[in-house]
Image (cartoon, rainbow over all chains, first blue to last red):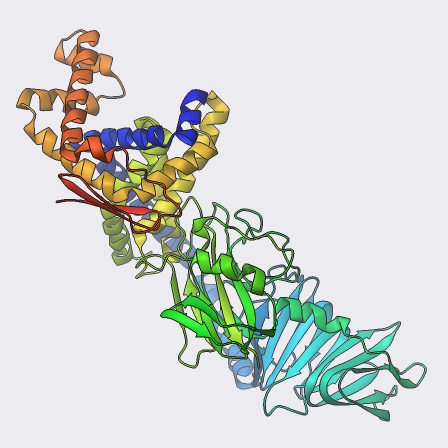
Length: 418
Length: 208
């Protein structure tokens, strides 16, 4: 057997001959029997499905008899409760628009697209969750606990959040036990810990931050602008400017970059994988989208094969790069489907292996190892990988093929920097 | 699962079954194990059919499931009995099976033609052997022939069929076509009877 294995692995002629022999026997088997294995197994399947149906019917009938009396009264009660819940359901505030692959939460459900309403709480033990509110993107960085109060204000009771106000958005309010932070059109972070109080850092724009006393009445106010931070502690009554903390923004830059939202099986990464070679960074039941180099100024024209032919990006263009990486284990049974929406417009989607390799050094993260084998890129034949760009060129949707034995698929998305 | 969904499942399974069985047989190397694999595959496909997205390719989805189930079976058999192909070999086999699918389909077609050319008694004998492949001894008893004679005759018929297929393929030239050419694109290969064209690492072969 070892000899056969060695021949199959090392001698392509023997390998081909082995498969041909097996195909030969398969055809003779098919030809030989009136009741072929196929018919036998299909018969088994029919029997199997009939048994399941009968069992389901029996089970349903038994349950119906047992609970029929109780059900009627429960239905009346449940109907009343649902009526009141439905009648007083708070208006939607936004949706969960992003999740990192490692999100862990013991208490909060974490589905992409889940609607957020007043009164909802989110508590994360690990990872990053992004919330899309009207004109505001909020990233919750674990460990963190937040709650939307009845008026829609976001209350941070532990941990760190980063808020990015989009065009036309302002007066987004975050409260902590120490402070109330009113955004005036900007990107800022808020960190709260009972021992150190509240830190507010503004990366860009303007923020009004107020110190609150024990009655939640504002007692002091600071206005912060680009690259400034302040600390607020209600216990000491301190509200003072401190050195700018840029660290709070780094996990979000690394995980989300300029992504506005993700859908389907897509997830972001909180740490940069050291290697993306086949089998090194498996994506179990999801597909990773990794922000690569951001705001790269092209010093010379870049020509790549895009979705609809050659794409020429002239020298002087500033682009941000994102790598979509799909490398599941053998247990995959569903084709991954998803979409990623960016804040900027998509300039090109690089699909073929040679262009991916050619742009690794310019656009890929430094120090990261990439696959160089031909199966790395996408196969755009019918029934294989599918990629589409939306009409507004902000969303890339895809479905990856799952044919063994090499499942790895990658695409690089170039987005015009804002 | 309702009845229309069930009949839809059975219809799609029936269309794909032959190729799936071929995959199971190639990986397991014998009919008994391939039968076991296919039973497991059918049950998994049935259980997961609700997750299968309508409009996508059932055969490809089912092929992936079959490959993984067969690989898991092969690992188990390897542990238990100390033989069966290892993972590296299975990967290579799957690559060739996938990239040469058109070529193998052509070989199957030629084999069917060669079978039709066999004398009626040889065809009956061959069918009997394959129908009873689990026990040729029983078949020998059934047809009242010595087992050695059965083996010799079977070997002779297989060789004759293989030669017939080889002639049909213009084998002398075609045997040198490697099926795994990762970096090569758009290679054209012609023999007196065949044209082969590669796109990426996949070959398409048809008769001229």
